[in-house]
Length: 414
Length: 176
Image 1 (cartoon, helix red, strand yellow):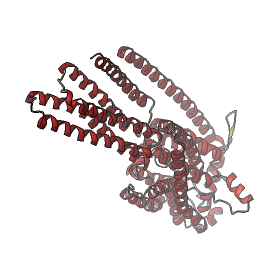
Image 2: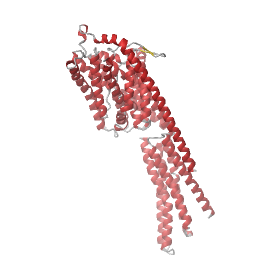
Image 3: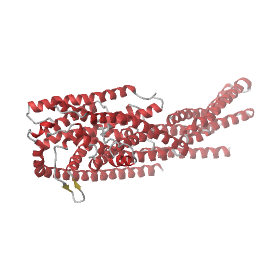
Image 4: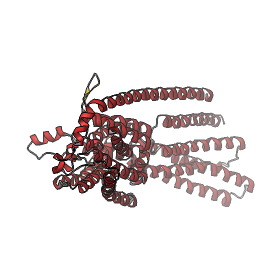
């Protein structure tokens, strides 16, 4: 049953992969600098790494907004957010999982009568505004610097593009890592209070309960990237503004920097040491940041080539998604509670009197679920490794065949 | 005549070399995914440049076969016409090179191509006028043949202008 509840989180993870993760490589794939297949593999691997290594930073912020205290509530919340994102992805609109999940948590708060922490909500929403603005400023500054370097160095176009290509892959990997670190909380954050799994010892390293959840979420995201992110990548890369190769690099770099700034506790601590206020650890909307970056470059270039119709649709999607997600959560919670009789959560004050489902899960989880998840993760890791080896072998075979046919062609030409 | 044959052989060799290079470049660009955003334009540019040397080779072959009887009074005009037309094509090379290293200088370099093309037009017009209005001793077939040869020479600068137009658009796109 507990694993069934987790499926909605995995569905949400898949949606995040299909929508949010496509923002990272959208400009690179759209500008044809990186192939979709290569982008999907790199984004998947680094997203998982970011989620597992650095993923816990922002999950606390969502806990503060509304700590979902029943697994049924987490399930419904994740399902509502996932459906919202899936619908937006179907229309190829880049929205953010953050928007959908925040809407869903507020919907849960309304249903259970919990108070929405306005201060945290304010912090999150202000980051939604600050994110794209900072992204646009970063993008314009970086774009000017790259253009200046290109013109003054008189570097050969082919060499320059090859540097850009390498840069896109490196920065894309960094972006995927940052996105994993920043946004995995949206997928698995709601399950954090309800799940307490035993530490998983993999020999070389040990995964804590949260890390196991984040790894599962990361794997779900990876499947979303590989199977369904193409559509949104196209919107990001081509439909808003036709991006040149250097603009593509700048967009990914600026977005990665913004995501990194809002998820790095180390950077925040460093800033505090210098006497400045700390950076809020908020799950930033990657879609808003990337659209902000593209818009910044478009405006710098004179705004003539910006497709304002697509931009309007995206803006509308940003307003609709938290509202739709909140409403959907509210109705789904109603059905779950009254028709299926599932405990979807209680008002925080009432929690002591009500049967505590999370503690049951803790006990239950220690014994059976940890074992299942352990074997599931091991299986997925083995399957993934075999898949990667098979892919490399297949690519090598293709390259060899191509080389042979090339040699034959040039031999006959002479 | 020996010199003409020697030049013809050289052009033939260069044309074959250009064809081979064109295929190699296109091949490399696809297999190593070089300049994915500009690939089709660069391929078209190479095609246009190759067309110039193709046209040169076919024109020289026609001249070789037809052996036009050129009155000595026209020697100076035709040499000048050929030199100007070839200059237009030659000025394309630095502009095409600049596209890869300093695209903002391309249009400036292309001005020379346009200048020589316009000069070729003027020279061709004046030469044809001399042939048809001043050289009454030539019969109409002879005059038509000479005009045909002039068209062949003029064609080189026209093709250079076509490539220059393409290059100019490519340069704007890359600078923006």
